[in-house]
Amino acid sequence: MAINNLKINKIKFEYLLKNIKPVEQTEDKQEITVDIDELTIDEKYKPYIKEFVKKTSTNFNFRNPNEKLETLAIKQKPILQTLLFPTSEASYDIFNNKIYAGKRIEDSIYHELFHAFTTYKENIFSIYSGFNYTNIHTDIARRLSEGYTDLLANRYFDSVVLYMIEANIARKTELILGEENMQDLYASNNLYAIIKYLSKFSSDEEAIAFISFVDKLSIYRNNIKKSIQIMNILSNYLVDVYVNVLVEFYSWGKFDKEDINIFLSIFKEEFTNYALYDDDIEKEYLRSSDYLDITSKLSNGNFQKQLRKKVLTK
Image (cartoon, rainbow, N blue to C red):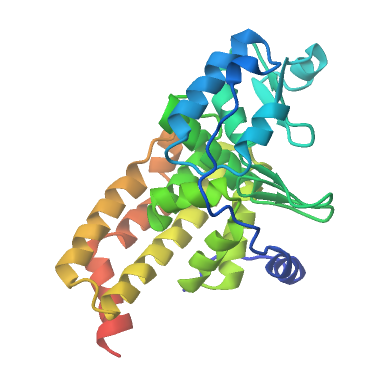
């Protein structure tokens, strides 16, 4: 099912399709054995690192966590960086495994630690950070990764959400992939698996365009209406993917119609009500025509029509 406006340049699509590939996976759980108290890091930062390790060690299988801890540096944010980026409380240098922390460290340290623990240098030209893949030619899934990092930092540490719309899209994507699965894909830098899963229920082009469109949000960071418009294009795509998932499972005999309506109702509740953490964005979102179209799509009656069309008439 094609989504209006979810388009991508053909050359860019073919390049990304060719270059986004599976990365080397970590099969066995890598336990953290480093003594955090012995790290050459300012003492004021160590309690945050201990808390991060404590709360994430069960649900995440980070790649080479001991090596990352042993080489991690945390420094006070330079004055020049504060002047150039006054709204950014902290940042992470993926090349040197270094966090630059602001004064309100509790608002951002866990977000940056997620970046530190999910960075993977595939080679000197290609670096992953969460879902984000960067090489000398492209930079893809940066905003999906930032949104999901914010979502996780808020979920595990009640951190402030700054990438609100990106976190909203990341949560909606997680509803389709499953929380445990998406966390595993994030920790193992498996953007490829997300694209392949989405393309099973749409197309390769739409799946890659979806990831690329999330990145477009960076262009309209200060334009709420345009950001909401992009978010609704992305949300419409995810709704159609989810409906296609249910239709396929129904056709396999995994569910009956009553089960599907229950799943759809739960999905609708979580999909349309996930917090945006900002009253102005929330109001703009709720009154947008695309939002109303999305909620209509998720009604059981509408789904039954698609179900009859796709399955019962086969």
